[in-house]
Image (cartoon, rainbow, N blue to C red):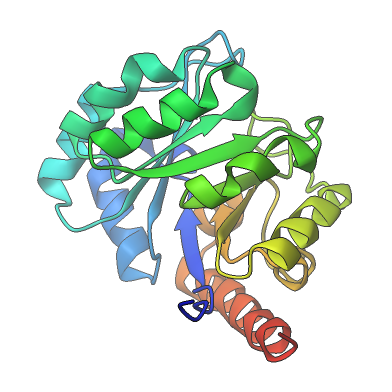
Length: 231
């Protein structure tokens, strides 16, 4: 049996919090400040009340930022509908919500078939046991630490047992947290086992985004080392 790999720290600013009028420049600045990937929130006005952007914007960004990793957070009611469009636009990872479908296995395979990595997310009200059967089949599990669809919400520390259970069961799995994560909450998320950190306003609204990203990375790497040494 192959040895399990230590999870890597990855910080992904949510570009929805950026100045959308100059999004290419904003994205490049975030990458220059040390971001490991960009988190793109797609909302359809059905799965969540808000409406954001779709594949055309992703395609434009890809042309201007060819080497960035695009993690698509698909807060949409019919995740199967947008898989090919996002792959064609240049998305790297397609994260759909478990609550949005009754055929997750089909969607996972559809995403793989077009060459994207697969993420699956769960809302705060969804028990972690619902996603466990699929964790071996995907590249990443997203545990929402706020209700999806709105920015600026308070981090829900009561979601951390989900993260801990996933990390204890799947040592190498990419586990992402999204919502209210910043310097004041990062230790809680990182200690629980999250290694992919989505952070919106904490990074974007800071006068020193590079410093914020550095603080987030320092915490995640510290807890990866501590937790991995226990295995």
